[in-house]
Image (tube, rainbow, N blue to C red; front, side, top):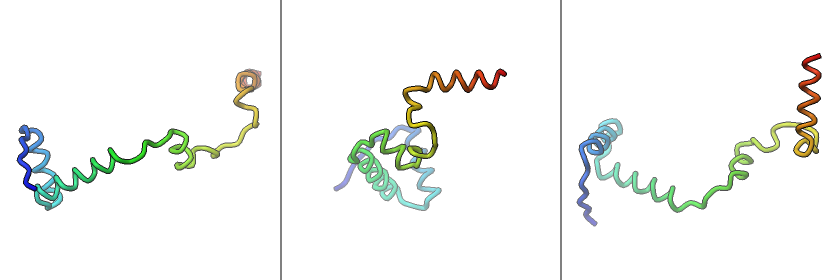
Length: 84
């Protein structure tokens, strides 16, 4: 399929710069851009908790198991000890 696209000057410069840097043709760069955009748009939205877990953020620290409930008391005690 042939595609006729109109690009403004700024996008034309960007496309030409990518072609120059990579040594690929305009067609190859545009195909790769479409593939990349398609992959982004069709993947399942990632849940924030899954992202944190995948990056080893969840479970990377140690604390009292009740910290979520008692954080204000724990923080107050910790700051009081520092002032003494």
